[in-house]
Image 1 (cartoon, helix red, strand yellow):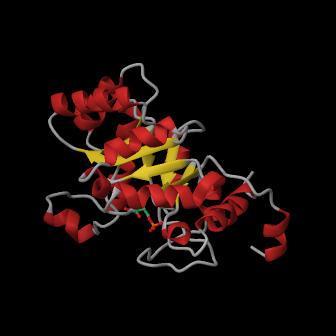
Image 2 (cartoon, protein in one colour):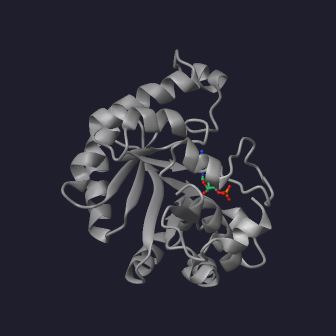
Image 3 (tube, helix red, strand yellow):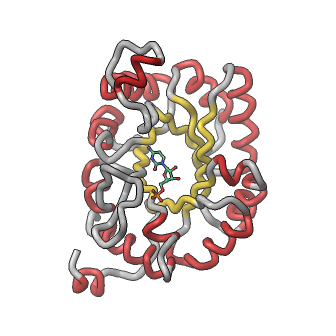
Length: 240
Ligand code: C5P
């Protein structure tokens, strides 16, 4: 995107942008959120923060009017998953991830009941290659398993999936217009790729079918996280 387009774009947050708080302590997360200010309103709290005081931070963010995505990838016997989802629903958080096995997904959907908590299925971890799946006993390629699990997520009543930029179009076409497609692995042209080998730009991820993008280090490692978040949002605005 040219600087001219960026200069013309409205300088406002985009509710489809999720910033992951990939830091070890709640204090570091608070400092990041303060630095981003009004340039983003949706944050992802993962397992690293969960191990310290992630839930307290999540409640704090909710009290500040932010949206919170708990990326905890629940995976346990159905009773435990159901109870965990019910407890998370009570917290008022917005998104929770679960592993994409039919029994796990159905239990999470039962647990959230009539609450507004959205259940997102992680179909196949992007760290797994076809040969890893063979080692684990699966007879399918990663792509085929992703497709199978998207169908199963829909059947289980999940609200959406986490999908790489390369799977976003498939998830959108199978899930339909209101299905949530949350896409990490997003890098604007102007930022370092870090360890995201097959990244897409924010605009391309949205065009492929993402309803939300997760974009971390281009914002969180920037000298000015507020300006970087607005720059990503300006690019997203081009998708309409
Ligand atoms: O800094 P960056 O934008 O790479 O952060 C991406 C976030 O999305 C991290 O929290 C990472 O764990 C998560 N994620 C990912 N790729 C996946 C699933 C989750 O990068 N396939």
